[in-house]
Image (tube, rainbow, N blue to C red; front, top):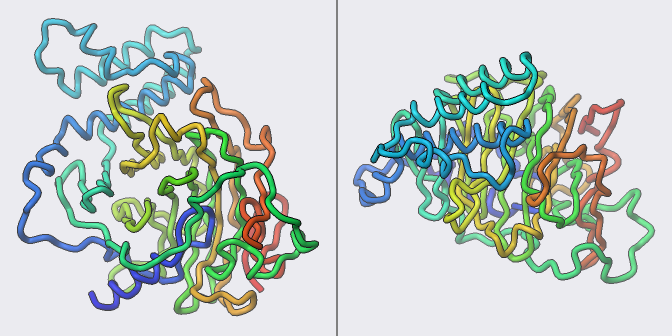
Length: 399
């Protein structure tokens, strides 16, 4: 555990706004056991009803994506009105109500069949929830399962002082097409392709994600593929897939992860493998109830739901930016000292949505954000040109 703590401290040196994720090949021992439960009241909140509500949030998102219900409609708040007279509403009642809405909708038969199958899967999908405020992790089957690593005592790079979010402050050098590591925000944290849209209120990204093949694995280096949301003066949140190089107990694999500020955790039940194409990987912000102060983040795929609380709320949601990343993280990257190779990562069918819009639009519908500030490039950038290679839509990282 001493080694794990040290690695977790290294993790804190990098964070939001599209820096490469940290360079350590962790084997996912990021949960620490707590033998004495001092959080009985808190833990009791995360019961079957709580996890069913998270599942219903995802179903609500699906219904909204298919234009079956409006974006301003909260599915959970609709249900009690239709089941009047019941003091308690079971999960089965909630899911049946959602299915009835689909059956009564005007979408075509094939789309209806596919959506009903998806809802049926969501009803029983395993869910992991991270309470970042208290640093505790909960599982829909086991309840409390451990604590996230707390790395708040070590400073890390963030960009929470954004004031001119679309403008440039200063004269840009002639290096944007081939910047040095020192001219890129987060450049010393690893090699990466960062694609980012401006701070315009984005609350969802969805894509088909192909995980790269990793070779020539070198200690102190780790591959990552992930999305992120961030806003001025708010701790951002990131979610995606982290490469695990394997050990005596586990073969090399990719694990879904979610990270916010000074804490992170994996969804260890849901391994994926190099070369896998995972359809419809969605990362979105949503409120379970209109009474909620803050948005919840959902990393959702075909077989998993990884969720966490966030600092996003009605006051800052209109300033949220979205990014997508592929990277090899390494502490003290100098532009030439990464040996690990990441081959053929791809994002396809990438769509994003703004919080006030009903439907998602293609990523290409928006101009990507890039800004020269504090003598560094923020937003969309390659770090560096000598490492980033493209073949059609595929991105590889090697030198």
